[in-house]
Image (cartoon, rainbow, N blue to C red; front, top):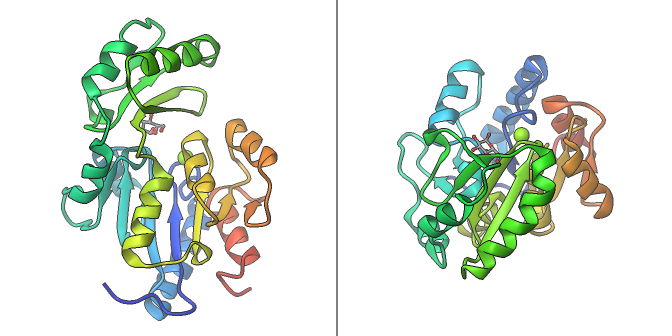
Length: 256
Ligand code: GLC
Ligand code: MG
């Protein structure tokens, strides 16, 4: 893999309602990023909640640039070779510490409000449900303490007022990006992460990466942003890829 030059950076973005959602802005951003990648070795990484199957489906619907690495299933799968389906074994090893998928499923089975998502969205290191916001208020704290009582050290991520992911303690989008940064030896200051919803909070909270929150961000992320303001996170006015562009100019990753 070629080196990142002084002007190059690590660009990490969520897909649904962040990179994808405004076709014209996506085209413009793609063009600028591809040019930057060719000139400066900038690296492009997608960090999505989708499984690899649903990611591949999206690539048939939208003109996505081939990424340098792909993080799928809310950070629980890392694909360094994006031409195949293989997951990085070192990342899988880290996630497996303290994880017990069967026990997580058995504990969650006590809650009738939790509706399993389709099989394609269940992963070795991810159990996912649908949950209404009304039920979430009561279910989330109870489930969390019951999982703890079962001796499970897991993470609950609720996104978009509908999706609940149970993940290993060592796994989420932000931790996957840190793993990549260390592997590629790229500084947090030279990294920018972009997102719109609850499962992206991990991208923004893990360290001092520059953060772009698109203007159409969901309330859960917006509230988190407001409670945790710093000058290395930027709430864009524009939506989706246009908001990303606005943020890249704001931080000086792209020249105006
Ligand atoms: C994507 C995934 C789903 C997950 C959601 C939120 O929609 O397909 O499994 O629950 O992202 O992370
Ligand atoms: Mg999204």
